[in-house]
Image (cartoon, rainbow, N blue to C red; front, side):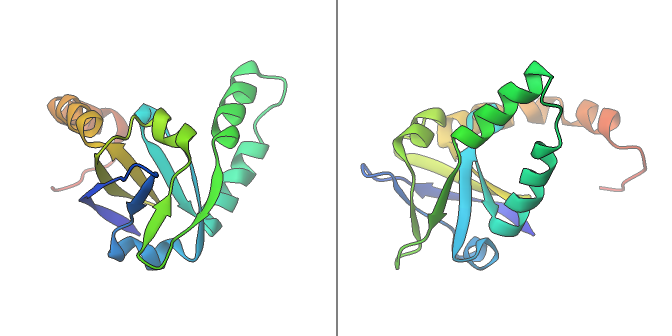
Length: 145
């Protein structure tokens, strides 16, 4: 399981260090694709295959399903880490997530997300303000936090 928040930087060639605690669970090869909320999603191959199966089952006749599937798969690329633990992100993904110098890498259960530091801070601030409301809408059982 992926969890935690880590500050990293991306160089001019699109290379970024993946936190050491995420590397083993990602495995030697993994998939990076456009994520929602202007970030990148990073999936270990086994999780990618589960997601791929779910997306393949979406109804082809629904325009929203076709659009989402196109968006998601057209941005996907199989990656691996170099000897320094860096991933080389393609330009189209760097541009999608507005990655410049400072980035935030977060663990989100079955995936890793890569965010521009500025975009993450704005998103986090807005979400934090409504966290209680979101929790009330989504959680059907009592959790003592």
